[in-house]
Length: 344
Picture 1 (cartoon, rainbow, N blue to C red):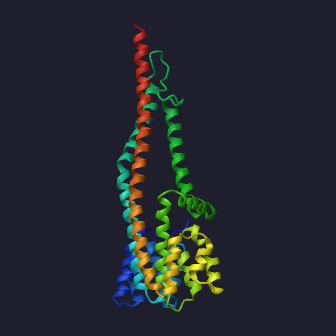
Picture 2: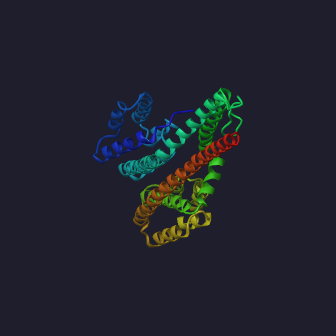
Picture 3: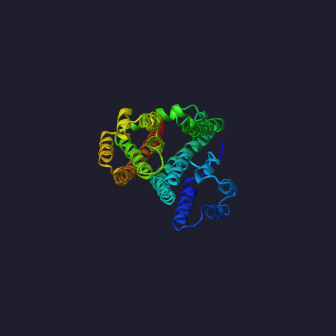
């Protein structure tokens, strides 16, 4: 599977490029400098981009030559930035986007780190009990199946470790496959969008991207149909991107953007009304820029809350699993004491 750039590398890359463009540096010089940074894979991709720029290609075209190293969202928005003459702003906004994702991920991992450590220790203790108690046996010489799972001694420990490894590997590869399988990803996203609170947060995030791209592309040389389609594609959310081409065709046929968006049935009413008012008043770029900031702030607030809630739920789930194991051990211990007391 082809390598993709990691967010922790992508965020500072976008920040450096955006700052350099804003300072007025030549884009070829900027990427020539990037060929000297990072690991071998990254330097190789930067050299590919550099060669594309030297050959007269745009930044977006040069980035797409490295597919799938750079995210499609980045390539699409860089293309928008070049067409609108706002490449520096696009790279800096992308840097903020990826930095926020890193911040959320880091906070989430910190929140669940201690419950995860407890869970791993509990699994280790269970494995040791399967091995040790299966070896020593009870008063009759029979090996002790303390958990009642039929896992005893070294053979039981091997089965236990194998099952845990299979579950871990299955979950990891299953997640990777789902991320790249379009229909499954669409179905999952539709389900998430219908989830209370989470769905609203994902909706706000998507509307922030649509509004931002529209603020960049309108009043430029891009056609209205291209502006609308690119804006919808920028969400990266199948709930909306599945309508992108239809919206673009409808606008190309003479419809206003808000009418095409409304006809898709996928966008919230408040966004459609905002878009309609902006088109009627002739203030689409300004209105969309304000809307983008508002939706982005709401989405970030919602994501922070959801991150905390998810961390708490995972902690509670792990605590329940550990509690169930402790209860099972306590019942076994109580039964052992009772059987021994009857022998006297």
